Image (tube, rainbow, N blue to C red):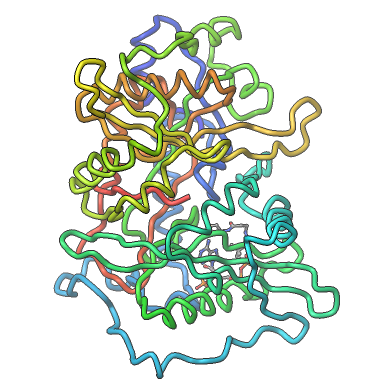
Length: 446
Ligand SMILES: CC(C)(COP(=O)(O)OP(=O)(O)OC[C@H]1O[C@@H](n2cnc3c(N)ncnc32)[C@H](O)[C@@H]1OP(=O)(O)O)[C@@H](O)C(=O)NCCC(=O)NCCS
């Protein structure tokens, strides 16, 4: 999107000159639904509201049959919070896979197998999420996929592919991984469903509903009855709708590739100056997280996540998997008090590059995504400024963050600009009384 005039006012205050604004950020970040609306903030928000109203009126042949919040029930008080359907006996779960069209067959993708991992990588690299203007496409690395799909207690059977029978070519994919997610007081075993992808040549053939039903069936076979997922499209019915914000680290490249545009009356050199960061981090004791920090980080994270209505319930095993640094996948830093050696704060981001489509000079946009951050002693603003500094040192082009948790307290101050896409969060077979505000959500899905 183009930063609305209203939204850029803060930045204008900081600098007497109009500033470079993330423009049609083609927010891959914002997953699938980037809408680049030129023009004034009001028109833009009106356009968005109209679009949303139209989506809500739309029929959903598949989703209307599923245990999810339905649009027709919106605003109907009295529907209880909690599971929409009770679990069935495991013996009542369909034992055989759903039927695919005759030319295709199911396959389980063994992510330990480098060759299969490469097939999945290639399918996603060529067919996964693009922005609305088809300028960028997510390029999850193989290492990232192996990390995202093999957390503690994962099920191989939940990494589901579809192949062409005749050629064995992999043409579709969907995954689940298990997690414990707390909704208010209740901790619920859920599947986190992700990486739904159908090859471009097989779109609009209603393959996605079969894939969603098949992953649901395999999740049920593990006696798990709820799921969490995100999408850039509006489906029945989001539990919350978030926005991605983008902090330019390499503004020249972002402008050159069309991710951002130069602000009105702004020169490239002023823009570069505006986004310049110090060479070194500022918080005393700020250092890379190590294995020995897992217990302290777990305590910090658990305490922090207890503040939100919906959040993961992480134990030490989860923290070791999800936040211990892994080269080019996840980066985490702690603040260790120079006096007491106590770990007082923590921040993390994951690495998700995007392919830049059709650009002569650049092929990859290196993006960091804010993951979980806990500012218990250091102000969050300082902690995140240090995160930006290390991301810049590591040559990321942009640092992205959703407006979840307490993020909105640093976004404008640290010169993030709002993106044009939205990310909707969903729960399967679980109803919340009301939609949440993004700041009430403590969950980041990959
Ligand atoms: C998302 C994708 C798999 C959908 O496949 P498709 O061929 O476009 O759509 P199909 O004809 O198979 O199925 C359409 C149904 O799937 C639903 N659907 C589409 N995208 C969906 C999503 N991201 N999550 C859940 N359901 C989705 C549609 O709403 C529709 O159901 P409805 O009639 O109840 O509304 C495909 O477009 C794709 O691979 N896109 C690029 C990657 C991507 O965006 N993945 C999703 C990331 S969240």
